[in-house]
Amino acid sequence: MLDLSNIPDLFASGRNIVFFLFALCAIGGAVYMISFTRVIHMVVALAFTFLSMAGFYVLLNAEFVAFVQILIYAGAISILMIFGIMMTKHRSEEEQEQRRPVHNVLLGIGVLALLGILFYAIQKSTFPDAQPFDGGQDNTLEIGNLLFNQYVIPFELMSVLLTVAFIGAIIVAKREED
Image 1 (cartoon, rainbow, N blue to C red):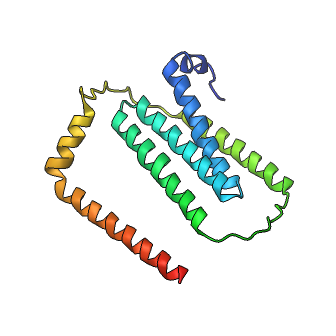
Image 2 (cartoon, one colour):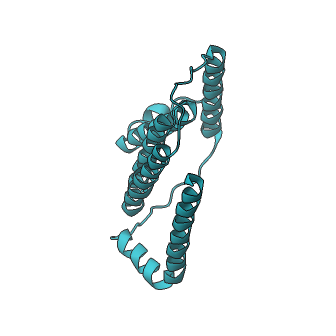
Image 3 (cartoon, one colour):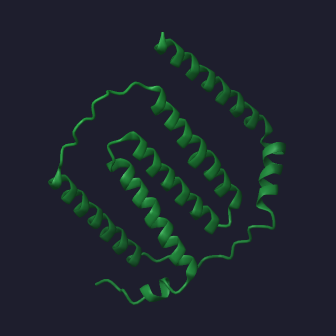
């Protein structure tokens, strides 16, 4: 039998409520992303999911990672996908979307079943007591020190690799255009 007596204690903290809202937004954006048929709508749903993930990082006191999540994923990757959509050819007539009510009902049942299984597993699990985490005063400074002292060569190699990949993508796009 499920023990639902600890649910009011779970939502007594504002941090848990904000986590729950970010979780709903992330899951909702992901479900919408795979459910939409237009690519531009998929990109917007994906960006919404990325922003929700940045909220998780803020809750974990990883502000730098949250900023990078917004800047790189929600910003750059989404803009890159939109440019890719704009640069490709599309048919002028709109395809009629086939209605699949049975598919939507089965999808809803599957999502609710997964939610029930996860809820049951979390309720039955025993977690060790959390140790207090000391995130330090300035985690961005620590990341910068590690990045530019200990990991400077992998950082530079990654920038060269990304530049080569970008140039290769331009060459492939030019060949397809000709």
